[in-house]
Image (cartoon, rainbow, N blue to C red; front, side):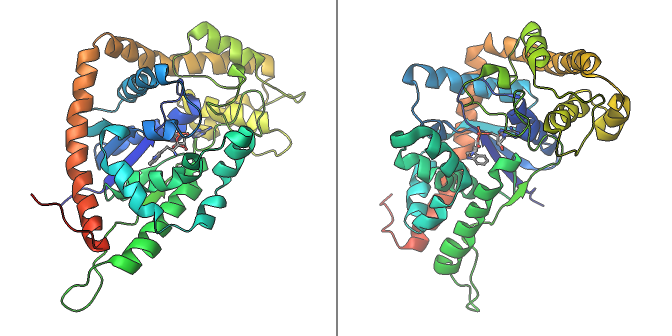
Length: 343
Ligand code: TYM
């Protein structure tokens, strides 16, 4: 029996934050026992907005090291760098040529990022979800564990696979039935941590691109900085923490973080904090956050002291990933009718 496949990735743009961890990476860890797991550092996605070439390689290594520090085990998972497996760019081109422009123009994340960038918007930013579809479809992924904000991109990947590739180009078996060329993936979005909000505004998502560093906690923030950011986090005048009150988005977000980071879950956290004032709650949340990140940070530091081992993990990952990705790419090339290269 082959195990179901999983693929996911994070962009190496600055230090990863609690949203990336709780919405994505943390959920990858448990899947390693039951699934065939592929995790890539999506560096081609990182250049869809203006980037610093002096930092890209370093940020790529930091991100890969953080995957391992969070519990991704290279013995059980394939960890690799997207740009080092050329099939990603090639399949993205093939998919580009069958994806309607207006599917991309209605992507919420494109619209949001495009507004922020003004006249700097690149074709790559618009095309970002097609590259993401290529990432997923190359590995015949069954499941894609992501945060809530990626749901629309996953739907697009499904539509491209089903309507634009399988329906049009799938070869037929002896009975004339189409044999699916690409597997149609499912998103895996867990409730806890799927949408971590900014510390300075409970109505907007915690994000790497927010210019205010105080809006997010990164996985590498030292304990004093974590405590300071939580101390300054936005609150409201009401006593007692609660979930689900639309008037109190900050209470919902910070209590949600506490529930996950303390490990006690939503019900117990809501009970513990129902009568608590912000002045008592914030140090508790700070301590839970520092303690949850401590083992990640310790492991990260030791991984970074041994760059050769990290590079070996990425080389082995690239080889394993390329073998799978190249096979899918040539299946699609054949179905689209390209002349096969001579061996
Ligand atoms: P990126 O780097 O923006 O985000 C990486 C992952 O973190 C999740 N995430 C959040 N989850 C909860 N709360 C938040 N505030 C928060 N912010 C980010 C994202 O949902 C994502 O799971 N396009 C992808 C990268 C990508 C990808 C892929 C993912 C490229 N190719 C193929 C899966 C499969 C992205 O948003 O990256």
